[in-house]
Amino acid sequence: MRKDGTGNYSQFTGMLAIAKASLRSIFRSPSAVIFSFLFPIIFILVFGFLSSTAPVIRVAFDAASKNDNPIYEKLLAGNNLKVLTQPYKKSKEDLEKGHITAIINIREVNPLAFPKYAIDITTSTAAADRIGLLQSIIQKAIGELDQANLPQKETYAFVVKETLPGRVYRTIDFILPGQLGFSLLSAGVFGVAFIFFNLRQTLVLKRFFATPIRRSYIVLGEGIGRIIFQLITAIVILSIGHFAFNFTLVNGLITFVELLVLSLVGLIVFMGFGFIVSGLANNESAIPPFANLVTLPQFLLAGTFFQIDNFPTWLQPICKVLPLTYLNEAMRNVAFEGAHLADCTTQLSYLLIWGVFLYAIAIKVFKWE
Image (cartoon, rainbow, N blue to C red; front, side):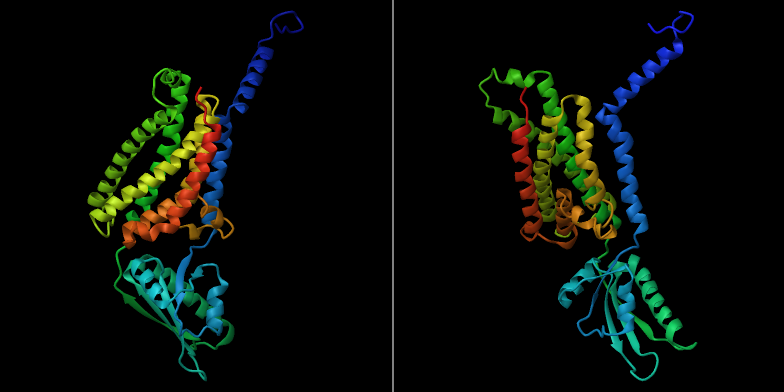
């Protein structure tokens, strides 16, 4: 016992000893460190990048556009426009689906006087939420050129806008696939990690070894149960989205079934993360930090809530490596664009590569006892 100078027990010294021991235990807890330090920092960084980055407007220029002029240079000088170089037919399809805001054509109308150029903007009703920002960007570029080079009442160029009919792209059409994908990721990681850790801790797996069933069939049985449950969840989510909020299913029942197939593929891949986490965790309290290290970055960076184009250029390659990015992309292509599974070979190939990689690690780290 610690005593003060009079030989009595020091309450203050005892309090400090308890505080020291408590502080040590907190810092030794992965959950406390990760939830208190790492996650808030990740949120601050992600939303800080979003708030400090100008909104990105995706456009295409017509092949006939005169781009060797100050107007074109001024438009590209800012960070707002992302110019896609692609055939006109592809640009027209993207315009109708709302993937790009406009097709721009800069025409020379008078080489000897002002205005010298006409800027034709072909947009669609699917891009109604972004066309106003694009027009502001163009008018600002024209205004800066006028102010620097021309007397009052003269202008360097004028804008002509044409609006084509386009498919209505609702917020739910972007949000729901991302939320479904994240639900599958969370279920695959947290569900599998906790189930197999608890089976190991309670010696249920060990008791299974006394029966004739093979180890592989134990894993398959638990996995099939998880898959069936999550597919039911996917059916409920898609049904509520479609019937309550008009979530787009372009080809009706065919699209619905293809989304379920994608859900199945995504869940099987994500379960690989769960097997790895259950093998690495030494106790139950270590599972949430490990699992959140897998799920949270994908939740924020894989296009669940925001277009990846809105992130800084250096961060976008990281976003495009994540498996949830490819699942979200495939689901949106199937649901809204009318693509079929055969058209999603790129996304499915990346998911397959991730699956092989994850299960190769899972086999190495998975523990039976």
